[in-house]
Image (tube, rainbow, N blue to C red; front, side):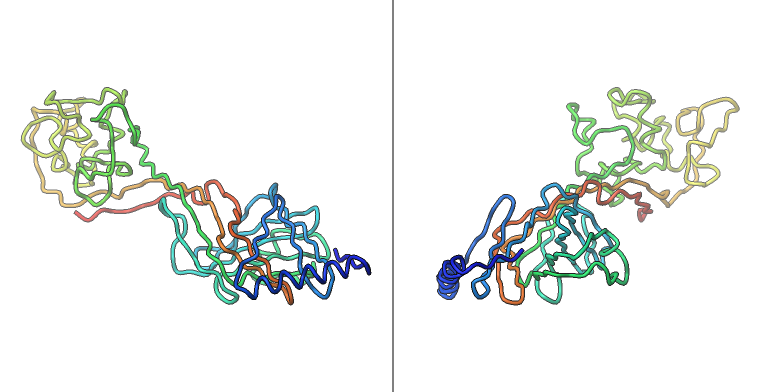
Length: 317
């Protein structure tokens, strides 16, 4: 919306003159409103944009190599978007990834349209020609922070945090297979899943040989002198289906059976990764043809479960 009146024009011209000189003295102008209101100086005109995306949902298109994050305000046909071309994987572990903004690499765009805009405008490989862009600000500098809260779950029935020290999986790696306990579905590396070895009550895990070490952390569950991993007669990386005594227990739980073969491989491991992503932009400088706006901190928004994926990995023996 452009407002031009003779009286207002004189006031705005003086206002713009003061602001422009203020900027020339290398003092940054910070315009922070809720919602943010942009005032641009252009020969006495006042250019007003709503820049209100508080109720808009943050969305994503593309892959890690070319990600676009965007919000749409359908009430006034406006959008704000962040484009990040990168070789990094995004939101794969808890922490912060930072990207410097420019007019050519990672870019923030604020746009006003002449008609309603949908997600297809950002998600199509070739953007549609309609709606038309009637107002655009480009982020020429600033820093985008992508903050991830990531959870890895191995579905073994043991909480990462527990009041019982024995049941705290933590960041250790009991079997030394390179996968931390908290997302290792076979904590002792015997090729029997922790979820199978723990028993029906995770707070009272099964201890077959009563040696004080729960089965899921015991490399020799029945204490027969043969490691559980080597009580795999058919060598299919699953000792749980090797039963020498008809109707009896699996060999690795039967101390009367001590048949050993050498197994030097782990089975394929599976775990789930979920990440919630938050995007914050610091020191954002938005520029149109003649206006420049600086925002100290802008929260673009949150996407819950921006990642929700199953990970398959086979540890090196």
